[in-house]
Every structure is written in C-alpha cells, then in structure tokens.
Image (cartoon, rainbow, N blue to C red; front, side):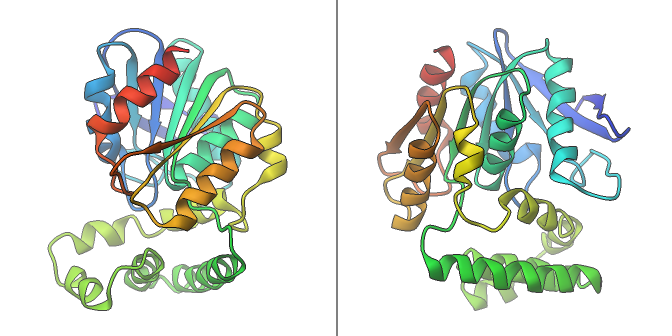
Length: 259
C-alpha cells in the first residue's frame, strides 16, 4: 500500500490505486487484506481507477476502539473522497455485507457488486452463525487469537487435519494477527440472515454474483440479495467457486460498472 487517507475518527487507512477512469473500490472479506483482492484490479484497470485497501485492523491500516460498522462505512467514505468523491463498490464474501451497508447509508456510490456474501438462508445455518459469534466473542475477550482463527476455519468447513496443519505453518502468525478483525466481519453480517430491510433501502443498482460450482446455500443467499434489492440482478459464473478467478469475474464487473 503506497497511499493513506484518514477516516473520520482519525484512523489511518492504507490503500493503493491503479488505472484510469471511474473509481471502483474493492473490499476484501474475512482473514484478508487489500492484497487479497489486488489481483482483480489488474484486469479492471484499463477501464477504471481501481482501489484496493487494508480494512481497519489489518495490514498497514490503523485501528481505533471501539469498533462499529459505521466506522468501516466512514473508512469507505474517506476512500471515496480521496478518489474524486464518487465510486462504485465491490465486496467479496463478508466484504459484500460492508459495501451493502455503505450503499444503504447514502454514500456517493454509483453501483454495488457483491460476490457470495455468506448470509444464512436456512435455520441450521443461522443457528451455526449464532454459535460461532458467541464463541468468537469469548475467544477474543480472552485473547485466544489462535482459537478464534480455528473457529473461523471450522465455520468455512475446513477439515480438522488441515486446520491443525495450518497451525504449524509459517502463515499462522499472520493469521493470528488478523484474528481481531473477525469480530468486525461478524458485526457487518449482523445476525447472519439476509438483511432485507437494509437491502430494500439501497437505491443504486446491485449485482449479486456467485459461482455455479459453489454450495447451493451460497448461491441461494446471493440470489436472495438480488431479489431484495430494488435494482438487484443475480449472475452465476460458470465453473467458479468461492475462490473466484479474477479473470472470470473481471469482465462481468466491468460490464456492470460501465453501466
């Protein structure tokens, strides 16, 4: 990250921009930084000014207590101001929940695209989410950062032997460094269910995309977002999963953001 802007509460937000044209801000999901979405900037940068950034509490960005979802919306407001006063937003996974909050808040946002925001569409999923957030809160309160990361990895369905392997790997300290931010992703997802009243208040076009090789519940959650947004559109990407290929996603986003 080679640039910084300051959010309303004084928190420093690190970002980088590439390309030229209307601004598009990329928002990462849980356990990730701006570097995670940066590869998507490359195929978009020939038509747009593309911004990737470290969300607060991650990477080179700062953090200021106490956390609230509104603080992350203010971070996006600062970024929008830094790139000309208007932007389109893209969020992957829980980052999608954040950009939907931002669009509903009245920020100068032209269009919003989300990829597989993991809202619960079944009762067992909602129950699992509640149990996860309760245990996550307890682990973070006791500074058991490794346990918090394990909870998240189990939530994603990662096999136990892979989780234990990750604990022994060189990447584990970096994952523990991001543990506190799991609470921020939990906050933007709220009770874990599709936030229909929030979506109903989004007054700009919304593209909700999913991979057709992803689990059915993720595709259904994505479709529910499109149906609840007044100007929502659902799009399935052939052969894609939650780990979407930037080169498969970029043309879809470019067409949508070009309007």
